[in-house]
Image (tube, rainbow, N blue to C red; front, side, top):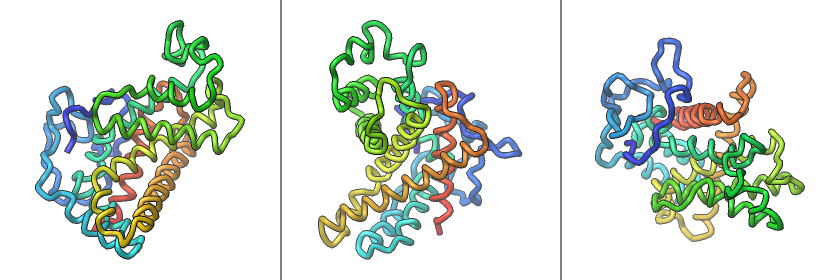
Length: 278
């Protein structure tokens, strides 16, 4: 369920747990998630100990519903597919959140790269984002430098997805705020960049797992683009809602809190998806 290359997230940055102390995902016990060694809801340590073994054909239900959606455009089938994707494909929202741990750790690096002064670990003398390195660069050249600094190529699908998600997030930021200075963003602008990065990364994980099914079942290429765009927009809306709910109860994104906030937003998003499972 959670590959060994998925990064560990510090225990202090884990998603909020329920009142009983369990990292419950709020869904009924379906018997699809084998018991662990007592660290339920926590990322795996080192050798991925305690990660449930993926069952055969775990995405079958999700692909079946996504196939119906691809052929007909029925949004309820799309939501059912996402529900099966989380519940059956990953054994519930808690494990799905663990699978997306790299999204949270990359978000922390991105937030640092978009910060100023001592909060930016890349801006020191000789660093990738040092003032001298950015001098005379256009906004889009700076975007490319940020991508290379935050998510250098390592050959994994997760990193390749994150590189695209970072670039898209920064492009969305500049579209929303044409006068934004990537060297000196406001708190609101940094929050938007992180939110868009997270939604892009969640969508790309779904696309990697289910996208082939959608592309094979659609009536034509135009429909494929439309279906994937609709899923992407739905993921974006759901992630945005999760960020808003966390902000409303007082969570503020800083270098020290970004991992925990992203983990919680992903968990809330996965819980929404899981609610559509049948």
